[in-house]
Length: 212
Image 1 (cartoon, rainbow, N blue to C red):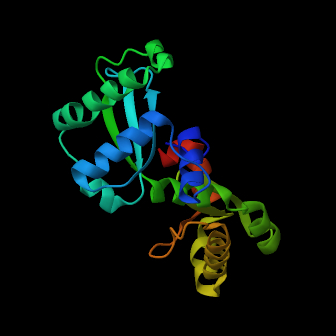
Image 2 (cartoon, one colour; image 1 turned 180 degrees about the vertical axis):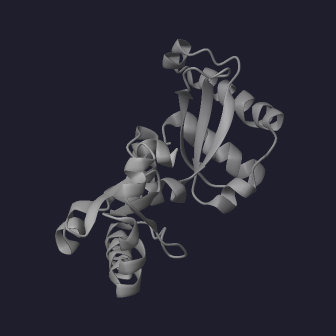
């Protein structure tokens, strides 16, 4: 799940008390709270293309502790969550779900904080850091999923700038930006991971294949 997806954007509004889930997910939220005491923020039905079982009921929970309360096994999720959800759709007469084949609807759990953390990382202004430090020292700063990699020019720069304090200064800039972007407090017990490498290593390994 990515931060720009509608299911997460609506979950943000729900966290701010600016929106409510759609009727089927409001009904499912009540069901989950009654059965397991967990708090569901939002959800959607998502088609994961090129998968053997493509249809997913993606549920965004308020905290990871909520997820820990939920059924773990896939067959339990199908029986205890998918089946009631499909009954709710039928009772609410939501015809747009007729477009989906929900005969095998698997259930995925998502922690709101994980997606919010990714949103913070995505929002880091690497250009600002480059302008502050200078392109003479930094070749580039790349975002790889939920961490950053700073590429110095040469291999010897990695140790040299670590010793000089430049590496710590860059890391501090990243964390400072993150704290400004952190609307939901997801950095209270974690930092954005920043790795340091050289453009020489990157080029020798064939570019982005180095990080796969």
